[in-house]
Length: 149
Ligand SMILES: Nc1ncnc2c1ncn2[C@@H]1O[C@H](COP(=O)(O)OP(=O)(O)O)[C@@H](O)[C@H]1O
Ligand SMILES: [Mg+2]
Image (cartoon, rainbow, N blue to C red; front, side):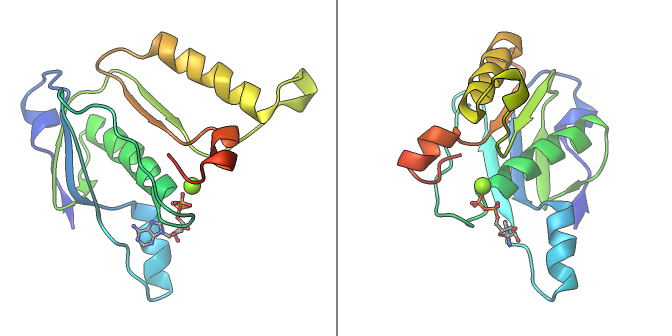
């Protein structure tokens, strides 16, 4: 089921709310369906009193998929599209920062951790109170304290 949004279309306000009930990642869902499996819906609720969420869970728990799903639903919402969820209320996001996975830039002397630090610094400089940031764990943090997104 895809739903039309309540907030982003009807009230052009920066409400800073992000409530998605039983959201799904559309392409992961289709991929699973093609092999007879189903996507377990995720519910995400961010509001001005609860803006920072830390997701923990074992490897393969679906943390990165949830981050991607959240960023994707935010983009669809800003474009006025239907979104893959039972119910969604999404305020206007002025910027979206999404970083999932790890990369390095060894030809420019930048390790994986260095790239992560530079990108995080860039996000912190550019993000406003109306921005949405979905960021996976730092690689070196992950090594010690497994699986935090
Ligand atoms: N909500 C979900 N329902 C069903 N399968 C899922 C869901 N989220 C992820 N998966 C499956 O689990 C795999 C691992 O998900 P991933 O998000 O990479 O986990 P993590 O980041 O916690 O290690 C994905 O490749 C996908 O096939
Ligand atoms: Mg992951």
